Length: 109
Image 1: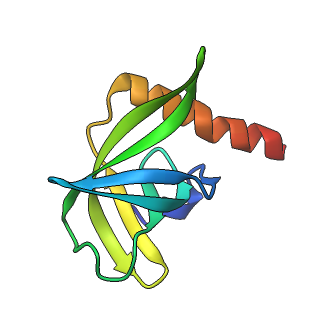
Image 2: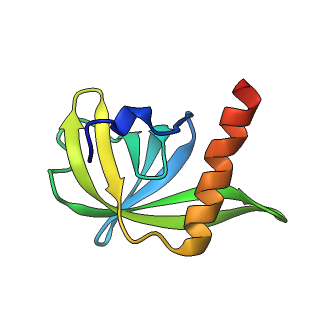
């Protein structure tokens, strides 16, 4: 992640998402999300640095809401949350995530 990671457009939220790691699944609270990463509340020491994970999140699409899988890797673990950096997002997931983030930013204007 770059030094200006917090300068990217982010959506602050308290949405529930499903976190999966291998065959393990857990519902978590999403604190904020950008096109590059997400901060989730998963519990202290539940995940370790560089662990591959997948977040399933409901995002708006033109005809409603649908679940998208956002693959990533754990980049930081603190008592305040766990940072997941996304990798290899599908184009449809990237577009839906961008739309979701922009909805919040446009509402703030």
